[in-house]
Length: 161
Image 1 (cartoon, rainbow, N blue to C red):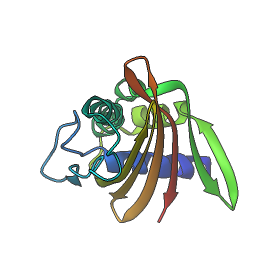
Image 2: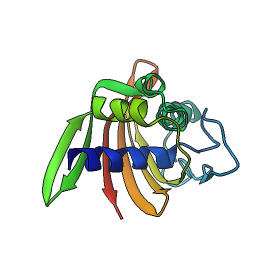
Image 3: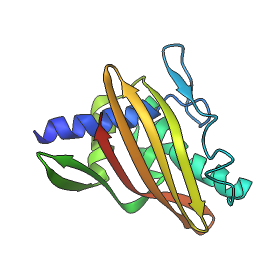
Image 4: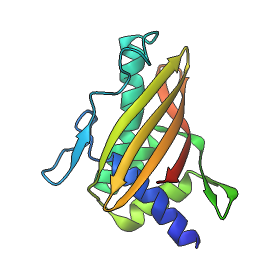
């Protein structure tokens, strides 16, 4: 069951991997809507630098999925970051290392996603992403914190649709 959970987590991440708005390469088999990140209403209080910083952290996350390389993702996550989900009506939280292991075990992937919401309040941000991997659809939510001049993902929570 643990392998299934990790696979679901990874497919969610993979779903984010094809965004043309980040540093990942776009390929012909992938599609994404990246222009809705931090739309005028949800991030009206954020500066352009803050929005760019949030996008940069998510870009590391998605590029790692496209390339199947955890070292890329590590740049966007805090060292103590976690992933959470519900399994059999129970909360499960794992260290982000589980995601890194999945990247390295499975290699590159194609998928689609759309960032549907982004809110920035000072040095914290929340981002919601709707993603699709094959026939599987997910909702991912990220909490980010500004660490010096860089934004870091401190938590990833997801659900399967």
